[in-house]
Length: 201
Image (cartoon, rainbow, N blue to C red; front, side, top):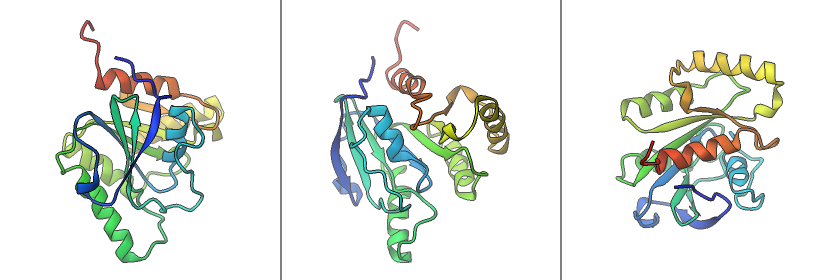
C-alpha cells in the first residue's frame, strides 16, 4: 500500500499522553536533536512548505506535533533534544515527554531518527541509537542537510558517519536534502513498504 505524503495535514499537538490522537493507525515518530531539520524534512515529504513551521531557534518545539498522512498513518514530531535555551524545568518537562513516548504503548511502527551529517556524532545521538537497539524499536537513520556536500564528499562523509555510529544495516540509512529534494522519494517508498509491505514480496 502506497502512502500519499502530499495528503498530509496538521492534526494537533499533545502536551501529555492523554492528548494524543486515537490509536487506530500506525505512527511514524520523528526524533533527533533540535535544529536537525525535522520540520524541513516533513515539509519536503509532503511537498508543502507551510505545513510545519521551520524555526531558526532550536528547541522551540516543546510538544508532540501530530500530522495525519493520507488517513493511513500519523507522523509524531517529538521535541528535539540538545541546544535548547529553555529554562531547565521546561527543558526537563519536554524531554520527559519524549522519553515517555516510547514506553506509552502507542502504535509506533517506525522511528525516523534524524542526524545532521555535517556534525560529529553527539552523545545524545549515540544514546538514542543505543536505546532503540536495546528496546528493539524499528528505526531508519536519516542523515539530513546533505546538500552541503558534493557527491564524492557525501559518500565519504556518509561512510565516516556509519563507522562512527557503528551502523551495519545500511539498508535502513538514508541521505536526504530538503533543500535540493534529494533522497526523498527513496525515503517515502521505504516508509510505505516498511509499514504496509506488499504481501506478494
